[in-house]
Length: 310
Ligand code: ADP
Ligand code: MG
Image 1: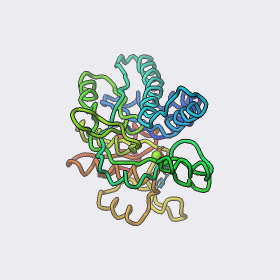
Image 2: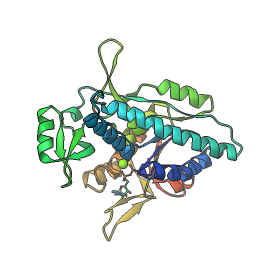
Image 3: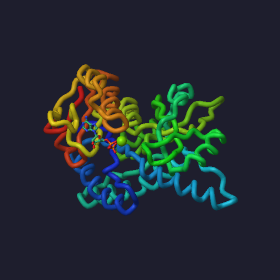
């Protein structure tokens, strides 16, 4: 029986630059096509860290040298990243499917993610983005009201908030496409963060939503059977990187909570994945999450590998 699956693609599915991306995407779509061929309904969510960083950098450089150009907000950078990653992914997947005799339409939805304007994350922006600045430049920017932070000894960077998603604005579009047998690519980079403003206006926010959390929210709204988070490791480990590390086949919500409290999952990499997996599983009985690597996705969904959270 085919399942409804939300697939969250990590950084290694796309590479660090356009050249790497075009190569990586070939492997990525082959793994996705295996799932489609097996009869699953698939929604694709992708990360955008390096891509949005590159766009933001280009925009900042152009801003410095081009008098006519105004400041380009983060929301627009995320929208651009969804556009060009989606363009590449949808074409590659379309071709791969057609080569296998599968004529399913694939398209990218420019997706906005609803966040709460009162999310505590806005009081403590801590996600570094874009180019590095000297301390003097950072001081000037701080005086201009831009939040800045020293990033691991490498220089000063702009920081934005990482609020939790509370809704996906275009979810009805994604659902309609799924029901019509299409393959949607949605909520790329966690979606463009917006908050409900007065009237019907959605206001773009200077923030970045974690793509693992956005995937969990989308999976919840679409009533998916499974959230599949694809990353660079086949399984989740406890005591990761230590001599007595242990790879997990299964993780209950209770164990996950315990291991999170004990600090087994690195902040900013594995922790948001386990948190997202737990959120989806806890949202309704019977829902499962899987964390594994791209090349093991099909086997993982068949229950043969990966870490299943239930
Ligand atoms: P993505 O781009 O897929 O979001 P990340 O690099 O953010 O990938 O997160 C995945 C990485 O998290 C893995 O490649 C691994 O190096 C690291 N990691 C940290 N803690 C753990 C853990 N406990 N178990 C497995 N991997 C872990
Ligand atoms: Mg990550």
